[in-house]
Image 1 (cartoon, rainbow, N blue to C red):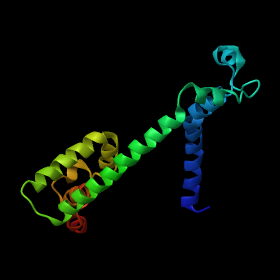
Image 2: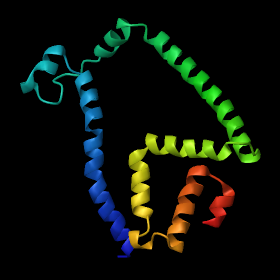
Image 3: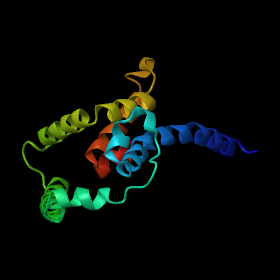
Length: 162
């Protein structure tokens, strides 16, 4: 058996239980939605409902104006998405084409925001991809640093240098 295929099988064997664990709250919610009130609060009732209570869904939807809430969510989300697309497109064009005072300071502030919003992801990328500490100051470290900055800034000139 080729090595990549063997690694893929081991990866699936490790990730399948994790996926089941990750999906278990969703399964619990769906199964609980079909139970009666006494079944929900009875610890001896078990995980599966005795009989599927389809009437729970119309009852839940009749408590509040769900359609109004859904429409409101769609309108607000759509409006925000449209405004962000316009704003982001114009800002990206300005950063890509225009040179202005303070441009590098804005890029630095962007780095801080990105790294503070996703500290775990950035740390994982830097830890996995980072050269050995003894190589700091070497050409390998300089290339690594240039690659990280190019990825964060999406600057084609810096990406080619890496």
